[in-house]
Image (cartoon, rainbow, N blue to C red):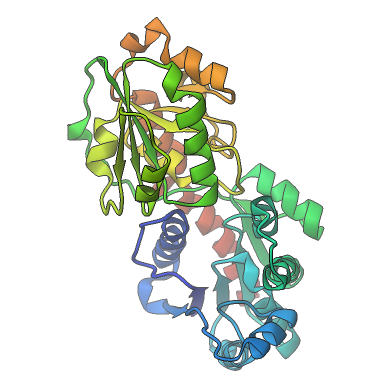
Length: 366
C-alpha cells in the first residue's frame, strides 16, 4: 500500500495553524500505513520572471504552487500509489487531471478552511491578479469536490459551506487535533491573583490584527487589574498603534509553552475566519481558562462557562473581566484539559482517520 501525500508545508513543523494541521495529517497517515509506505511531495512557491505566463497559468486554474509541468509529473507518476492525498483544497486541478488520466486509486482532500469563503472575507481585491486568484480558489475547490473520492472538513459550518458552494457533503468531519505536548506535572492549581495575566497568541495576520486591535481599543481601557501579553510572528508591528502601558509584545516566539502556562486567561477576540482556530485547541491542551468569541470556539464542543466564557461584544468582555468572580478561577482549568484529551488530541482523532482509510483500503482490495 503506497501513499503520496502532497503539501506545501514541512511536515515536521508546527509553528502555525496550517503547519499544525499538516503535521497532524501526516502523522496520522504514518500511524495507519507506516512511514515506509508514505512519499511526501512538498510543493514550492513558484516565482515567475514573466508576469504574462503567470497570468495565463492562473486563468487556467493553476496557482502559486502549481503549473502544467508539475501537475503532469504528478499524474505520470501516479500509478504506483494506492492513495493520493491533497493536504489543501485549492489543488483540485490535480484531482481532475488524475481522474481524466484514468487513475484507479483513491484521492483524498483536506479542507483546512473553506478557502473561498475565507479569502472573500479578507476582501483585498485591489488588483486583477487578486480577483483571478479568488476565482482560481473557487474553481479548484469545486474540482476537489467533483473529482476527489474523499472530502474531509474540520467542522459542521465548513461542511455546510462546502455543500452550499460546491454541492457536495464531506465524507467526514475531523476537528483540529495535535500531539499532546503538555507535562501534567507543571499544572498550577492555585487561585489566580490580580493583576491577571491575559494572553493573546497569533501571528500578524489580518483576522488576528483586527481582533486584538479591537480588544485593545474597546475593552482593555475599561478593565482593571490586568496585563495583556500579545505573542506571535510579526506582532511587533502593533507597537505603532499601542498607547496603553499594560501591554507586552513578543515577536517570533519559537516556543509559547511558558507564556501559555503563566497566563491566567487566554483571550481570543476573533470575529472572522473559516475552519477552526488552532490557538483554541492549544489553550485546551495547556488547561487554560479561555475567553473567546463565537468564531474562536467554532467547531469546538465545549461548555463555555466551564472553559471560561463566550463573549462577543465589548460589554460582555468588560463585564467578565471586571467581575468579582475572577478570584475564584484557578490558573489551570481541569475541564479544558480533559476536553482536549478526549476530543482534540492526536489519539482522539486517529480513530476517525483509521475508519476513513480502512474503508478505502477495502475498496481497493475488492
